[in-house]
Length: 479
Image (cartoon, rainbow, N blue to C red; front, side):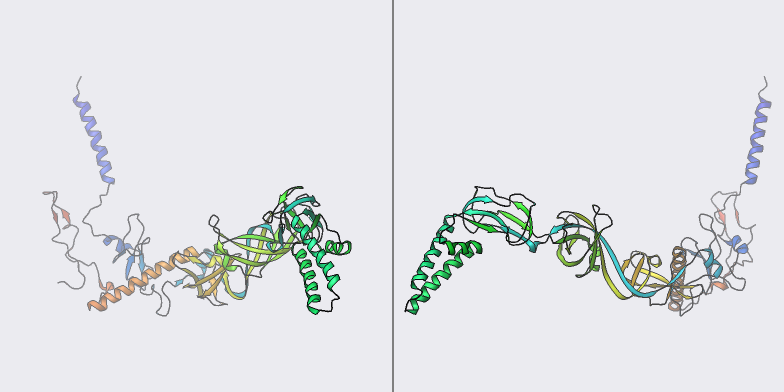
């Protein structure tokens, strides 16, 4: 079998395919001057103006004296002499035609002066008023004879008998008082003033001692009338309240160190509110507050801020704020949790703008002020507090000025490009003034009479030899 015709056929087909492929392939010649051919067909922004230079659409710091494209094939953008803005305009001022303004959805809002406040929402916990808590301790050692109030949580009224106590010291104090009374009765009519005064003072001192030992007034009167001592004396409640803690039982021996009862008046309560650090500057003593509880839907309790604690909680990084509330029906109970709304930081004359009008870059905050239709000026601002979508402006914007509230990303991007362009133009002017040489980019041309594509060739005799002898760049003057 003859193999030569088959081999020739295969070689012929390979040669035809390679020819077709090479005919459609256009290699990129590395020595071709970038932008020479593109500059001829490059679009011009304005037929009456010539661009100073061309900049990269993605990075304005990259420029070219002629039109070209970046690595992704995007056209460089022309930069004209008026792109830096007028001399009296701040750098970064943006001009947009009305059609574009409408298409990109630019919305403007006027800065206004109004009363400005903020509602701080936090979690609160109900506690007893510490000024209305009493811990009862006996004034002398003894034994509890009887408990008249013997349950925790039981309500008591002022002067209710809590318990009776037997104490040898109390019994001896009663005897001393009775002796003083008899002595006063005998010596009270003495013709010697010193004796009369001494008897009277002894009786007064003995009676005062019983009072200091918490012997109730009604038992002192009974002691005076009957002339007989009591084995057990009563201790009464000092006010209306609730028994928060009961720590004694009948027959127990107690001393002045023993806490027998803990009573609390809950007709007024405190609420401790945890406020975060960034919200604390709003809170002031006297601010009003509203409380709601899940256990009582639809009911709102009102109070005021009475104290701001001077320290922060290490675990929660919050600061406690104390509220005082009236609780006549005892609806608020200690250790209840409540949702608290603080109406804080009322400022009657504040300049505010929408929060959406602020451009935050991390290092500064700025807004875009409308100077004329389609002209937007970037302006740095000093901000205060924010509340419900509005931000207080301390400096940078006056009431009545119009600011951009939407499409900020597009305007901010264009502003940064114009600002970079303006800085580049200023740097170019500074270099010209320092070097003493004026750089006229408009006078630069690519006319090269001696340049022809025939002379720009790759020498086939040497693969690494490039003949550039016929290539010249005419820029108006030659060294």
